[in-house]
Length: 439
Image (cartoon, rainbow, N blue to C red):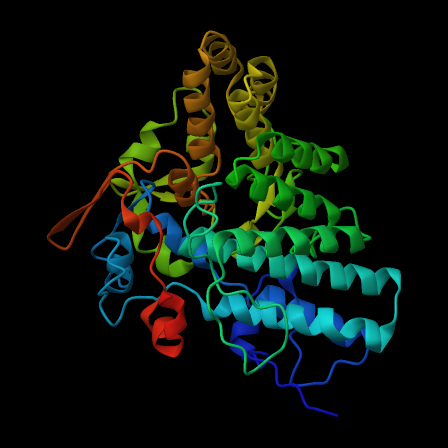
Protein backbone atom coordinates (compact mmCIF):
# COMPACT_ATOMS: atom_id res chain seq x y z
CA UNK A 1 0.00 0.00 0.00
CA UNK A 2 1.37 3.41 -0.94
CA UNK A 3 2.39 5.48 2.02
CA UNK A 4 0.92 8.99 2.10
CA UNK A 5 3.04 11.66 3.77
CA UNK A 6 0.97 14.56 5.04
CA UNK A 7 2.64 17.98 4.90
CA UNK A 8 2.81 19.87 8.15
CA UNK A 9 1.16 17.22 10.31
CA UNK A 10 3.91 17.05 12.90
CA UNK A 11 3.21 19.96 15.21
CA UNK A 12 5.43 21.07 18.07
CA UNK A 13 4.21 20.87 21.63
CA UNK A 14 4.74 24.60 21.93
CA UNK A 15 2.45 25.33 18.98
CA UNK A 16 -0.27 23.15 20.45
CA UNK A 17 0.09 24.76 23.84
CA UNK A 18 -0.70 28.12 22.30
CA UNK A 19 -4.22 26.99 21.41
CA UNK A 20 -7.02 28.03 23.73
CA UNK A 21 -9.07 25.30 25.35
CA UNK A 22 -11.90 25.70 22.89
CA UNK A 23 -9.48 24.71 20.12
CA UNK A 24 -8.14 21.73 22.02
CA UNK A 25 -7.61 19.77 18.83
CA UNK A 26 -4.88 17.26 18.12
CA UNK A 27 -3.20 16.88 14.75
CA UNK A 28 -2.32 13.42 13.49
CA UNK A 29 1.09 12.11 12.57
CA UNK A 30 2.22 10.51 9.35
CA UNK A 31 -0.43 7.83 8.84
CA UNK A 32 -2.49 6.00 6.31
CA UNK A 33 -6.07 6.92 7.34
CA UNK A 34 -8.22 3.89 8.00
CA UNK A 35 -10.69 4.75 10.77
CA UNK A 36 -13.24 7.50 11.33
CA UNK A 37 -10.94 9.06 13.92
CA UNK A 38 -8.08 9.07 11.39
CA UNK A 39 -10.19 10.98 8.88
CA UNK A 40 -11.43 13.36 11.56
CA UNK A 41 -7.77 13.92 12.43
CA UNK A 42 -7.01 14.80 8.82
CA UNK A 43 -9.88 17.27 8.76
CA UNK A 44 -8.73 18.77 12.04
CA UNK A 45 -5.25 19.27 10.58
CA UNK A 46 -6.83 21.01 7.60
CA UNK A 47 -8.54 23.44 9.97
CA UNK A 48 -5.53 23.89 12.22
CA UNK A 49 -3.24 24.78 9.33
CA UNK A 50 -5.55 27.28 7.67
CA UNK A 51 -3.56 30.52 7.26
CA UNK A 52 -3.94 33.76 9.21
CA UNK A 53 -3.83 35.92 6.07
CA UNK A 54 -6.70 38.17 7.12
CA UNK A 55 -4.59 39.68 9.90
CA UNK A 56 -2.19 40.96 7.27
CA UNK A 57 -4.98 42.10 4.97
CA UNK A 58 -6.06 44.55 7.68
CA UNK A 59 -2.68 46.28 7.36
CA UNK A 60 -3.49 47.08 3.72
CA UNK A 61 -6.71 48.90 4.59
CA UNK A 62 -7.71 52.21 6.18
CA UNK A 63 -8.21 50.49 9.56
CA UNK A 64 -4.69 50.56 11.03
CA UNK A 65 -1.64 52.75 11.56
CA UNK A 66 1.74 51.04 11.79
CA UNK A 67 3.57 51.55 15.09
CA UNK A 68 7.13 52.21 13.96
CA UNK A 69 8.51 51.61 17.46
CA UNK A 70 7.18 48.05 17.69
CA UNK A 71 9.48 45.06 17.34
CA UNK A 72 7.38 43.62 14.49
CA UNK A 73 7.16 46.82 12.43
CA UNK A 74 10.16 45.87 10.28
CA UNK A 75 8.43 42.64 9.28
CA UNK A 76 5.12 44.29 8.42
CA UNK A 77 6.04 47.73 7.02
CA UNK A 78 6.18 46.56 3.38
CA UNK A 79 2.74 44.99 3.75
CA UNK A 80 1.50 48.28 5.18
CA UNK A 81 3.02 50.17 2.24
CA UNK A 82 1.70 47.68 -0.38
CA UNK A 83 5.26 46.86 -1.44
CA UNK A 84 4.60 43.37 -2.80
CA UNK A 85 7.06 43.65 -5.69
CA UNK A 86 10.34 44.11 -3.79
CA UNK A 87 9.71 43.66 -0.07
CA UNK A 88 12.46 43.56 2.52
CA UNK A 89 13.67 39.96 3.00
CA UNK A 90 12.44 40.07 6.60
CA UNK A 91 8.86 40.87 5.51
CA UNK A 92 6.23 38.31 6.44
CA UNK A 93 5.13 36.67 3.19
CA UNK A 94 1.45 36.40 2.41
CA UNK A 95 0.29 32.81 2.85
CA UNK A 96 0.10 30.72 -0.28
CA UNK A 97 1.30 27.17 0.35
CA UNK A 98 -0.69 26.97 3.57
CA UNK A 99 -3.93 27.14 1.60
CA UNK A 100 -2.85 24.16 -0.47
CA UNK A 101 -1.79 22.21 2.61
CA UNK A 102 -5.35 22.55 3.92
CA UNK A 103 -6.64 21.55 0.49
CA UNK A 104 -4.27 18.55 0.47
CA UNK A 105 -5.89 17.12 3.59
CA UNK A 106 -9.34 17.75 2.12
CA UNK A 107 -8.40 16.00 -1.12
CA UNK A 108 -7.14 12.96 0.75
CA UNK A 109 -10.44 12.70 2.63
CA UNK A 110 -12.57 13.19 -0.48
CA UNK A 111 -10.63 10.62 -2.50
CA UNK A 112 -10.40 7.80 0.06
CA UNK A 113 -13.00 8.06 2.81
CA UNK A 114 -15.77 6.22 0.95
CA UNK A 115 -13.49 3.30 0.07
CA UNK A 116 -12.22 3.01 3.63
CA UNK A 117 -15.40 3.60 5.63
CA UNK A 118 -18.45 3.43 3.39
CA UNK A 119 -21.30 5.78 4.20
CA UNK A 120 -22.67 6.93 7.55
CA UNK A 121 -23.83 10.19 9.07
CA UNK A 122 -20.41 10.89 10.58
CA UNK A 123 -18.56 9.95 7.39
CA UNK A 124 -20.83 12.17 5.30
CA UNK A 125 -20.24 15.06 7.71
CA UNK A 126 -16.45 14.75 7.49
CA UNK A 127 -16.52 14.45 3.72
CA UNK A 128 -18.88 17.43 3.48
CA UNK A 129 -16.49 19.51 5.59
CA UNK A 130 -13.62 18.49 3.28
CA UNK A 131 -15.48 19.69 0.19
CA UNK A 132 -16.30 22.97 1.89
CA UNK A 133 -12.73 23.48 3.08
CA UNK A 134 -11.47 22.91 -0.45
CA UNK A 135 -14.00 25.44 -1.72
CA UNK A 136 -13.21 27.99 0.99
CA UNK A 137 -9.43 27.77 0.52
CA UNK A 138 -9.76 28.30 -3.24
CA UNK A 139 -12.21 31.15 -2.61
CA UNK A 140 -9.79 32.91 -0.28
CA UNK A 141 -6.97 32.44 -2.78
CA UNK A 142 -9.17 34.10 -5.40
CA UNK A 143 -9.95 36.99 -3.06
CA UNK A 144 -6.25 37.65 -2.50
CA UNK A 145 -4.56 36.87 -5.79
CA UNK A 146 -7.16 37.40 -8.51
CA UNK A 147 -9.46 40.07 -9.85
CA UNK A 148 -13.01 40.39 -8.55
CA UNK A 149 -15.52 38.13 -10.29
CA UNK A 150 -17.65 39.75 -12.97
CA UNK A 151 -19.05 38.49 -16.28
CA UNK A 152 -16.32 40.49 -18.01
CA UNK A 153 -13.51 39.00 -15.88
CA UNK A 154 -14.23 35.27 -16.20
CA UNK A 155 -11.40 34.76 -18.71
CA UNK A 156 -8.76 36.46 -16.58
CA UNK A 157 -6.21 34.57 -14.50
CA UNK A 158 -7.65 32.90 -11.44
CA UNK A 159 -5.73 30.54 -9.17
CA UNK A 160 -4.29 27.04 -9.48
CA UNK A 161 -6.92 24.42 -8.69
CA UNK A 162 -6.01 21.39 -6.61
CA UNK A 163 -8.69 18.71 -6.67
CA UNK A 164 -6.69 15.48 -6.51
CA UNK A 165 -3.54 13.97 -5.02
CA UNK A 166 -1.03 14.17 -7.86
CA UNK A 167 2.59 14.97 -7.10
CA UNK A 168 3.30 15.42 -10.81
CA UNK A 169 0.51 17.93 -11.38
CA UNK A 170 1.44 21.30 -12.89
CA UNK A 171 -0.26 24.06 -10.98
CA UNK A 172 -1.13 26.48 -13.75
CA UNK A 173 -3.75 29.08 -12.72
CA UNK A 174 -7.21 28.39 -14.04
CA UNK A 175 -9.36 31.25 -15.27
CA UNK A 176 -11.51 33.14 -12.79
CA UNK A 177 -14.56 31.54 -14.37
CA UNK A 178 -13.24 27.99 -14.02
CA UNK A 179 -11.95 28.70 -10.53
CA UNK A 180 -15.39 29.79 -9.37
CA UNK A 181 -17.04 26.85 -11.14
CA UNK A 182 -14.91 24.57 -8.95
CA UNK A 183 -15.71 26.56 -5.78
CA UNK A 184 -19.45 26.45 -6.45
CA UNK A 185 -19.38 22.74 -7.29
CA UNK A 186 -17.52 21.88 -4.08
CA UNK A 187 -19.89 24.04 -2.04
CA UNK A 188 -22.92 22.25 -3.47
CA UNK A 189 -21.47 18.78 -2.90
CA UNK A 190 -20.26 19.60 0.58
CA UNK A 191 -23.49 21.20 1.76
CA UNK A 192 -25.53 18.22 0.54
CA UNK A 193 -23.41 15.86 2.65
CA UNK A 194 -23.49 17.77 5.94
CA UNK A 195 -25.53 16.27 8.76
CA UNK A 196 -24.84 18.88 11.46
CA UNK A 197 -27.01 22.01 11.36
CA UNK A 198 -24.94 24.03 13.83
CA UNK A 199 -21.68 23.09 15.53
CA UNK A 200 -21.51 23.16 19.32
CA UNK A 201 -19.40 25.78 21.07
CA UNK A 202 -15.88 24.41 21.28
CA UNK A 203 -15.97 22.66 17.91
CA UNK A 204 -17.50 25.54 15.97
CA UNK A 205 -14.30 25.96 14.00
CA UNK A 206 -15.83 23.17 11.86
CA UNK A 207 -18.24 23.60 8.98
CA UNK A 208 -21.94 23.05 9.63
CA UNK A 209 -24.98 23.64 7.44
CA UNK A 210 -25.22 27.09 8.99
CA UNK A 211 -21.58 27.73 8.09
CA UNK A 212 -22.06 26.40 4.57
CA UNK A 213 -25.01 28.73 3.98
CA UNK A 214 -23.02 31.68 5.38
CA UNK A 215 -20.15 30.85 3.06
CA UNK A 216 -22.51 30.60 0.09
CA UNK A 217 -23.94 34.01 0.98
CA UNK A 218 -20.49 35.59 0.98
CA UNK A 219 -19.47 33.93 -2.29
CA UNK A 220 -22.66 35.12 -3.98
CA UNK A 221 -22.23 38.62 -2.55
CA UNK A 222 -18.70 38.88 -3.92
CA UNK A 223 -19.95 37.63 -7.30
CA UNK A 224 -22.65 40.31 -7.39
CA UNK A 225 -25.47 37.75 -7.29
CA UNK A 226 -27.66 39.70 -4.93
CA UNK A 227 -30.76 37.52 -4.64
CA UNK A 228 -28.74 34.33 -4.28
CA UNK A 229 -26.73 35.98 -1.49
CA UNK A 230 -29.96 36.95 0.30
CA UNK A 231 -31.41 33.46 -0.03
CA UNK A 232 -28.31 31.77 1.37
CA UNK A 233 -28.08 34.23 4.27
CA UNK A 234 -31.71 33.62 5.19
CA UNK A 235 -31.13 29.86 5.17
CA UNK A 236 -28.38 30.34 7.74
CA UNK A 237 -30.54 32.69 9.83
CA UNK A 238 -33.36 30.14 9.90
CA UNK A 239 -31.09 27.98 12.04
CA UNK A 240 -30.04 30.86 14.32
CA UNK A 241 -30.73 34.56 13.79
CA UNK A 242 -29.53 35.90 17.16
CA UNK A 243 -27.44 39.03 17.60
CA UNK A 244 -25.37 40.10 20.59
CA UNK A 245 -26.99 43.09 22.33
CA UNK A 246 -24.20 45.41 23.42
CA UNK A 247 -26.69 47.31 25.59
CA UNK A 248 -26.73 44.35 27.97
CA UNK A 249 -24.07 44.51 30.67
CA UNK A 250 -21.50 41.75 30.48
CA UNK A 251 -22.37 40.85 26.89
CA UNK A 252 -19.69 39.04 24.92
CA UNK A 253 -18.03 40.59 21.92
CA UNK A 254 -19.93 39.52 18.80
CA UNK A 255 -16.88 37.72 17.40
CA UNK A 256 -16.28 35.74 20.60
CA UNK A 257 -16.59 32.02 19.80
CA UNK A 258 -19.18 31.67 22.58
CA UNK A 259 -21.33 34.60 21.46
CA UNK A 260 -24.92 34.06 20.43
CA UNK A 261 -24.25 35.05 16.84
CA UNK A 262 -21.03 33.24 15.97
CA UNK A 263 -21.36 30.78 13.10
CA UNK A 264 -17.81 29.59 12.46
CA UNK A 265 -14.79 30.44 14.63
CA UNK A 266 -11.95 29.31 12.40
CA UNK A 267 -9.67 32.09 11.21
CA UNK A 268 -7.10 34.01 13.24
CA UNK A 269 -7.93 37.58 12.26
CA UNK A 270 -5.59 39.32 14.72
CA UNK A 271 -2.25 37.62 15.17
CA UNK A 272 0.22 39.11 17.69
CA UNK A 273 2.63 40.33 15.00
CA UNK A 274 -0.06 42.63 13.61
CA UNK A 275 -1.88 43.47 16.81
CA UNK A 276 1.26 44.62 18.63
CA UNK A 277 2.67 46.57 15.68
CA UNK A 278 -0.33 48.77 14.91
CA UNK A 279 -2.85 51.23 16.29
CA UNK A 280 -6.42 51.93 15.21
CA UNK A 281 -6.58 54.59 12.52
CA UNK A 282 -8.28 57.90 13.18
CA UNK A 283 -10.46 57.27 10.11
CA UNK A 284 -11.87 54.09 11.63
CA UNK A 285 -12.36 55.64 15.07
CA UNK A 286 -14.12 58.66 13.56
CA UNK A 287 -16.61 56.41 11.76
CA UNK A 288 -18.36 55.56 15.05
CA UNK A 289 -20.93 58.26 15.94
CA UNK A 290 -22.08 59.28 19.40
CA UNK A 291 -24.02 56.47 21.02
CA UNK A 292 -22.35 53.68 19.04
CA UNK A 293 -21.45 51.13 21.70
CA UNK A 294 -18.93 49.36 19.51
CA UNK A 295 -16.25 52.03 19.84
CA UNK A 296 -15.92 51.37 23.56
CA UNK A 297 -16.20 47.59 23.20
CA UNK A 298 -14.02 47.05 20.15
CA UNK A 299 -11.16 49.40 21.10
CA UNK A 300 -9.37 50.77 24.14
CA UNK A 301 -7.01 53.67 24.76
CA UNK A 302 -3.30 52.90 24.97
CA UNK A 303 -1.31 56.03 25.71
CA UNK A 304 -2.33 58.52 23.07
CA UNK A 305 -3.60 55.85 20.67
CA UNK A 306 -6.20 53.09 20.52
CA UNK A 307 -5.71 49.34 20.19
CA UNK A 308 -8.10 46.55 19.32
CA UNK A 309 -9.95 44.39 21.84
CA UNK A 310 -11.31 42.07 19.14
CA UNK A 311 -8.33 39.75 18.83
CA UNK A 312 -5.13 38.49 20.34
CA UNK A 313 -6.35 35.06 21.39
CA UNK A 314 -8.07 32.12 19.76
CA UNK A 315 -11.44 32.82 21.34
CA UNK A 316 -11.82 35.70 18.86
CA UNK A 317 -11.18 33.59 15.76
CA UNK A 318 -13.99 34.22 13.29
CA UNK A 319 -14.96 33.38 9.74
CA UNK A 320 -18.72 33.92 9.76
CA UNK A 321 -21.26 35.43 12.15
CA UNK A 322 -24.83 36.65 12.01
CA UNK A 323 -24.17 40.39 11.84
CA UNK A 324 -22.34 39.81 8.57
CA UNK A 325 -25.45 38.08 7.20
CA UNK A 326 -27.74 40.91 8.30
CA UNK A 327 -25.51 43.37 6.47
CA UNK A 328 -25.33 41.16 3.38
CA UNK A 329 -29.12 41.03 3.22
CA UNK A 330 -29.32 44.78 3.71
CA UNK A 331 -26.73 45.53 1.01
CA UNK A 332 -28.20 43.17 -1.55
CA UNK A 333 -31.71 44.49 -0.99
CA UNK A 334 -30.53 48.05 -1.54
CA UNK A 335 -28.85 47.00 -4.78
CA UNK A 336 -32.10 45.31 -5.86
CA UNK A 337 -34.14 48.42 -5.00
CA UNK A 338 -35.87 46.84 -1.98
CA UNK A 339 -35.09 49.66 0.43
CA UNK A 340 -37.77 48.79 2.99
CA UNK A 341 -36.36 45.29 3.37
CA UNK A 342 -32.84 46.66 3.56
CA UNK A 343 -33.83 49.08 6.32
CA UNK A 344 -35.42 46.23 8.27
CA UNK A 345 -32.16 44.31 8.56
CA UNK A 346 -29.99 47.39 8.99
CA UNK A 347 -32.10 48.69 11.86
CA UNK A 348 -32.25 45.24 13.49
CA UNK A 349 -28.47 45.25 13.73
CA UNK A 350 -28.22 48.85 14.90
CA UNK A 351 -30.73 48.22 17.68
CA UNK A 352 -28.15 45.89 19.21
CA UNK A 353 -25.18 48.18 18.66
CA UNK A 354 -26.41 51.68 19.64
CA UNK A 355 -27.85 53.18 22.79
CA UNK A 356 -31.63 53.57 22.67
CA UNK A 357 -31.56 57.31 21.92
CA UNK A 358 -28.85 56.98 19.28
CA UNK A 359 -30.71 54.07 17.68
CA UNK A 360 -33.85 56.20 17.30
CA UNK A 361 -31.81 58.91 15.60
CA UNK A 362 -30.14 56.38 13.32
CA UNK A 363 -33.44 54.85 12.20
CA UNK A 364 -34.90 58.25 11.37
CA UNK A 365 -31.83 59.31 9.43
CA UNK A 366 -31.61 56.06 7.46
CA UNK A 367 -35.31 56.14 6.51
CA UNK A 368 -34.84 59.41 4.60
CA UNK A 369 -31.84 58.31 2.54
CA UNK A 370 -32.13 57.84 -1.22
CA UNK A 371 -30.93 54.51 -2.63
CA UNK A 372 -27.29 55.43 -3.31
CA UNK A 373 -26.82 57.05 0.08
CA UNK A 374 -28.50 54.10 1.78
CA UNK A 375 -25.99 51.79 0.07
CA UNK A 376 -23.19 53.99 1.42
CA UNK A 377 -24.76 53.74 4.89
CA UNK A 378 -24.82 49.94 4.71
CA UNK A 379 -21.20 49.78 3.55
CA UNK A 380 -20.24 52.17 6.36
CA UNK A 381 -21.98 49.86 8.80
CA UNK A 382 -19.91 46.95 7.45
CA UNK A 383 -16.79 49.02 8.13
CA UNK A 384 -17.86 49.63 11.74
CA UNK A 385 -19.28 46.23 12.54
CA UNK A 386 -16.70 43.98 10.89
CA UNK A 387 -13.65 46.08 11.76
CA UNK A 388 -10.40 44.10 11.90
CA UNK A 389 -12.07 40.82 10.97
CA UNK A 390 -10.20 40.70 7.66
CA UNK A 391 -13.12 41.63 5.41
CA UNK A 392 -12.44 45.34 4.92
CA UNK A 393 -9.85 44.74 2.18
CA UNK A 394 -12.29 42.56 0.26
CA UNK A 395 -15.06 45.15 0.64
CA UNK A 396 -12.81 47.92 -0.68
CA UNK A 397 -11.64 45.72 -3.54
CA UNK A 398 -15.12 44.70 -4.67
CA UNK A 399 -16.70 48.16 -4.39
CA UNK A 400 -15.03 51.56 -4.89
CA UNK A 401 -11.31 50.70 -4.62
CA UNK A 402 -10.57 54.09 -3.06
CA UNK A 403 -7.21 55.80 -2.75
CA UNK A 404 -5.52 55.15 0.62
CA UNK A 405 -2.35 56.82 1.90
CA UNK A 406 0.02 55.24 4.42
CA UNK A 407 3.17 56.79 5.88
CA UNK A 408 5.89 54.82 7.63
CA UNK A 409 9.65 55.04 8.26
CA UNK A 410 9.95 58.28 6.32
CA UNK A 411 8.00 57.05 3.32
CA UNK A 412 4.55 58.15 2.22
CA UNK A 413 2.84 55.83 -0.25
CA UNK A 414 -0.58 56.13 -1.85
CA UNK A 415 -2.61 53.22 -3.12
CA UNK A 416 -4.31 54.99 -6.00
CA UNK A 417 -7.98 54.76 -6.94
CA UNK A 418 -8.41 51.42 -8.76
CA UNK A 419 -4.77 50.60 -8.10
CA UNK A 420 -3.59 47.26 -9.60
CA UNK A 421 -2.24 46.42 -6.13
CA UNK A 422 -5.80 45.69 -5.03
CA UNK A 423 -4.90 42.31 -6.55
CA UNK A 424 -2.06 41.01 -4.38
CA UNK A 425 1.04 39.70 -6.11
CA UNK A 426 1.88 36.05 -5.49
CA UNK A 427 4.71 35.69 -2.94
CA UNK A 428 8.12 35.52 -4.61
CA UNK A 429 8.86 32.16 -3.01
CA UNK A 430 5.71 30.74 -4.59
CA UNK A 431 6.69 32.19 -7.98
CA UNK A 432 10.20 30.75 -7.67
CA UNK A 433 8.78 27.31 -6.94
CA UNK A 434 6.10 27.58 -9.62
CA UNK A 435 6.80 29.99 -12.50
CA UNK A 436 3.45 28.92 -13.98
CA UNK A 437 1.80 31.29 -11.51
CA UNK A 438 2.63 34.18 -13.80
CA UNK A 439 1.02 32.59 -16.84
